[in-house]
Length: 273
Image 1 (spheres, rainbow, N blue to C red):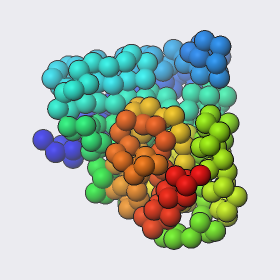
Image 2: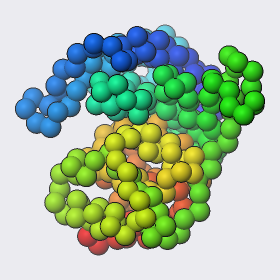
Image 3: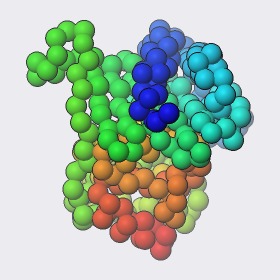
Image 4: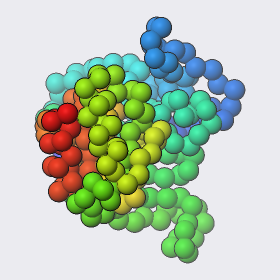
């Protein structure tokens, strides 16, 4: 099977996860702190319920596939096909009533990301890609492209931006870059960029794929943070790697750029410190 063959199934995963999550958004839901005294790392009943629902559907449909999820760990991570799930990427935004969160559904084939979706059920958006092309589907019609109740789809393309001085750069928060040298390297990039914005989590990468942002720079990410997003960025014409230029699937220090020329310039400068 190719990644495209899984597209309809990914839509089903997005649907079932959204049905679990939406009743909790902008409610009085509580959050448990997973950090055990470190930096606040919340998890909610919505996170756990949505991941459990997606895992059940995967097990019923593709029993030989592996699963890696933020809330319930790994199951057969060495399988040929492995699903990588983050039920709510941006839980801090979720519990604050802000819509800058999303459900990340990624698929790896032999260890490489081959298909990904960022589903935002509240705004009714689904960003998805297979590394060759990327799309955005929205349920709410815009500019008369679709009648009420039907999905409108458009192609995603990154924008040209070879110069750092013209770039918009995003990171979830500089405070999350714990290593002093990494934070200094990021700060140098931010000072030279035209504009810096914080706090969008997975939305930053989708904004990059849509041509509104030029760079996303982060550290200490996990596979569930990035596997779904890499095929979206790459399918829109961008590049997403580790700072060392390697496969981002294992997480770590991540650099995404809409223009491959800018990616190489910034990557070298990040490594130079």
